[in-house]
Length: 373
Image (cartoon, rainbow, N blue to C red; front, side, top):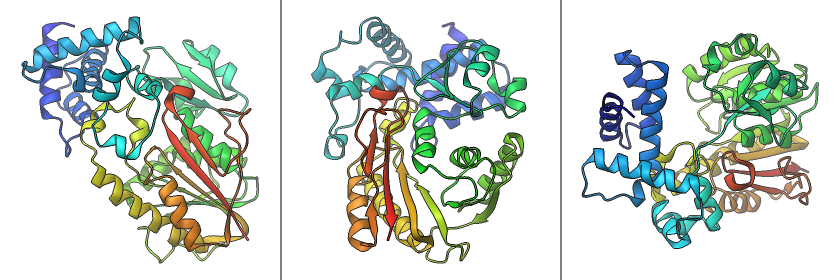
């Protein structure tokens, strides 16, 4: 990369910290300066993420420019031969030491974290192949309407995006919607909807029939959801603020409740390598307490015979099996519900679904399902 782009990347790396995530610093820098063309922004972003992907391997005594160059050398070596680095080096240097207390992966997880992430799209139902042909550089994979996009055009500027023909959504998140298996005419609650990625999928699976309550603690996210839903032509939802407390946004009893809870995001560390070095085990414990609270407070909204689906894009014990065990002790009327992993259709159904990056080429995800007596 040229000197100008390298200097910009180094400044962004030095500005990034726990309060200022690297992806946010990148966005703010590009928005503020507006001097980089598309090729330069890609090169700068790649340099920043390559640095944080390989940070644990670098000589910390070198200046930042030398470290970035060293990161590129590691990356080139690894992409040419992923087995060129010894397993023990990968285990010791890919993630912080505390991760060993919470995650028990094989070495393939570490290799997956060092690969560049895929960009996943979700096409309208039944339109995956047609969309791939129109966009170019897109390949259907794993799910009928999931595409991996390998091109360089700005997808947000394409006529297909503005026509609502696809969403940018990781394949693991798409799997969550399929696991929910909502039916047209049912009533669902997406309790932590954020800006609506999973809600839009639920709406499509329900053929825009029935009703979905969409809640979040931040009003600005619900405003973004409104714009996204209008573009996607999803109209069967109702937004409401909910802070996760015991007072629910509605007295409605639901066929299904999805708790896509705030989490440590360990499953996204391939896509977001900076977070490896800012997330702590204390964060994991605090988030696990919040997740237990969300499930406990939302449980009353599930009607008898209805489903509770819990999903998190993390792989830590505290936020997965720890939360499940706590919920089942507190709510014995919720029985584990065996569901299939749509990304591994030949695997036996289970009440707990683990999705690992090395198996799907997307984010890591954990899903648990219950049915209320």
